[in-house]
Image (cartoon, rainbow, N blue to C red):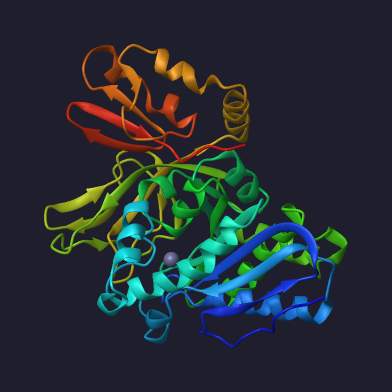
Length: 384
Ligand SMILES: [Zn+2]
């Protein structure tokens, strides 16, 4: 039994496919940023191929378009970034608001919520994949909040994984899904205008359909070619990169990125990266520059990260499974936050200020905030 037909581009519902078999509920979203249309094309192409081939898919796959208003104008967003307003408080505000007062993005978000929430809440196994592309040239990569479930999905793709990027921004669509205890990853397919970006997004979708158990490998058309396309594109970059710094910019920063950087670019200590009203911005150490801003809109200038070994990931997964997370709260000056879930408060005085941040990152505490003489380490909700 096959349901729903495939709709044309830039309609909210791109279509769905199910063979009536039990299994995971999968949602793919493209064009959350309006200058990144490749994901929409990729979802439509995969759905068309599924309807043609009619494989015995376990569960269901549904595709949605993100920011239709911005896509029609080829802009990242019209009023505000649609990928920054998915924190619980913001969602509650939009739901309580009179729709007549919605900004362009709030109305997009209202429609997406009405479609995604019922699918998510009714599913025993749910995954959302948010397909993006970048303004700078460069490699495909994945991004996810650091939960073990997310890691499993992201690491099934043969492209670099950026850990800590999702936590360094507030209110992403993936944060919304991860905080509800489900899996959610971002796939960055390459440069916005590169025709290869859609091809890489399509490859990523098919590989994820296999890794989550929706399709067996023999039912995926040209699976070996598709895996090679992604592997070749990601070659030369570290497999896993831990994001340790976000360079935030404001409208009055006069921020200009130095030309010539790729979206994953190895840099040396002291190298000039950008300029703003205060002068040159230089690399603090030998590290990896990520997602340099080469477009007018956005408040992330660039990110910096360091390569980490897969063995470190395996150690961290094992320690979390064994429940070693709580050892952190035995350290002097460290306590669970009194009101905020999934957060540790660390005194900024005495011995506690010397604890390496890597101890906290090991257990997924990747978001750092300062609050009244304390440092907060926040992580995504963990669920096996
Ligand atoms: Zn994007």
